[in-house]
Image (cartoon, rainbow, N blue to C red):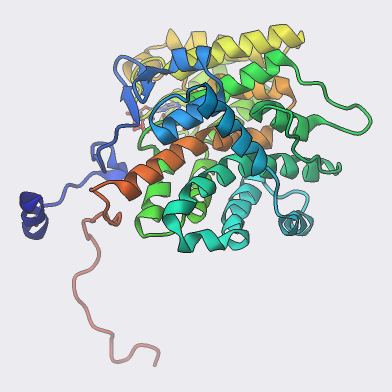
Length: 402
Ligand code: ACO
């Protein structure tokens, strides 16, 4: 420790690394990625195995606590989720004030930080309260998201039900109507669990770094998560799943399903257009999540008997890109967002809520990383350096504004 202190005090050397592509900001024992081999593990478990054998709450527990819950812990965690699923009635009034066309990510972020106004007492007892804060967030974000949907649709809000599982509850709050009711569909519930698991953590990505950056100043968990939601919103990050569908729809409508123009545009260096859902900062091979997401997509579409022309376009796009020199040379493969949107669409989730689904999934990862930072010995405020390239010293002209 002494050496590190000394080094910190003495160091005049800084690395210049835009986008921090080669800068490690911390050590972590949560998520392992091998971008060359296409491996992703949470706490040592392969993503495929977790998606196959666990539900989303198990994985949330694993990320936050470091181990998979035993039977009684599993039941207790699920019960806690039920106890904290309701929103303070005061928070409901906020929905009346947002315009109907509000983007659900803006609403989600605003509501996440609003939790700190309705549940502020916990900030003064940080240690005993942290479990409750974590549970509240995990449970209430799902309620917030479903209420946002109901508000967009102009339908009455549906309250959470204690007899339903985490994902069933979400789907029921989204799709129940007094006229049509809602009957949980095990295939859809399973698929949703799996999609959320795929999104649950991805080490030091943009939004997780933001959550930690905000948290590093000592800001509370709700505030940190709210900022992370904003970071996830961007089209180069979580917003990509929405952009993928919009791109596929354009190919269908404007190019009659012909993919060549989009491929050519993606390769054209004078055109800022990128093939959405392709490429990744860390994966230089097929994203292991994309493989699972593709299988889920086929399962859901077959189950619902939903013939989606966008799936056919996506598959042809993938084949064409994988066979193309441009994409090969740059190691550009489908990422997790390429197939998730088509699945969410088949489930009836509107396009502008895809990134909200990503946020619900990523929440345990954000929380686990925030806790790891807060409790770890490396905890320091995030404060990168820069290379100053502006003017050297000058003085204000005596005749300025005369
Ligand atoms: N389409 C066309 N060309 C691409 C694409 C793409 N989707 N992605 C990267 N490239 C090209 C770049 O133009 C660049 O080419 P050049 O070397 O000839 O200039 C080269 O590949 C390297 O790209 P960078 O921008 O340096 O890669 P970076 O690691 O900074 O970006 C990113 C990664 C943002 C994911 C990028 O691949 C991209 O914009 N993809 C599309 C958006 C997307 O799908 N985002 C979701 C990411 S996954 C997630 O958030 C869960």
